[in-house]
Length: 239
Image (cartoon, rainbow, N blue to C red; front, side):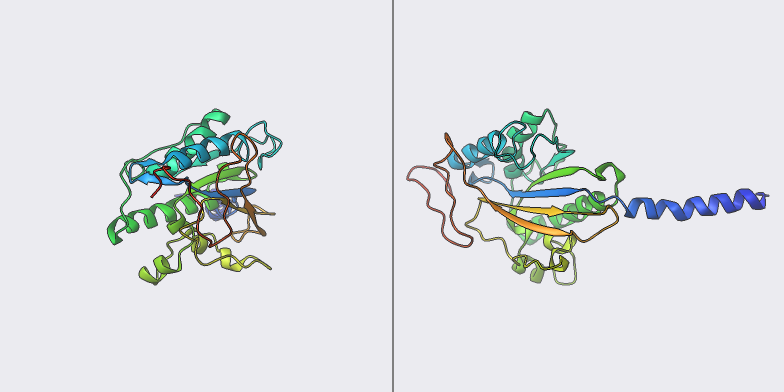
């Protein structure tokens, strides 16, 4: 029979575990879309250049333009082949490895079955980000599919489920923020930056949008307005 005092200690510990897991939000999450694509397997020339530019400037360990300012991210995360190809130069610049899985290495398909797989992955990733103490006080970079960052159409298709990062990270509840319901198909040139003031928060304290304006030698990369068509050069191979 368990002594009364030991039983009380064990009960107290069991009550503390869920609290610890719930108090683990990162300090900051930087969300970017993958680069412009050529096929379901690879980026086009502009997308590949954007991936290099991100690593050299906005997500660089050394550039004065860097959003990270010398702060090594705890992880660079990806979810599909396009996002993996975009994220690799940044991960390499920081000496990080990107964890992969079979879904990430499968050519993307825009159908309900494949989207349901990414929806499930979205839920797993966000649950880990908000519950795993390893992220507490850290910055995490997510290179993601725009349809699974924010999409009113996807949310309607999977009504009653939490499927997009916008839903799962409660971006509609951020004080004084108007987070778009959909990330436009034509935009590859923005960051969404979420800041958490306290690790116990499940809703970000602040939401910031940063537009990508690259310096030389990447100043030629398109930077169209939100929702405007992207001006692509002839022969870029971008679809």
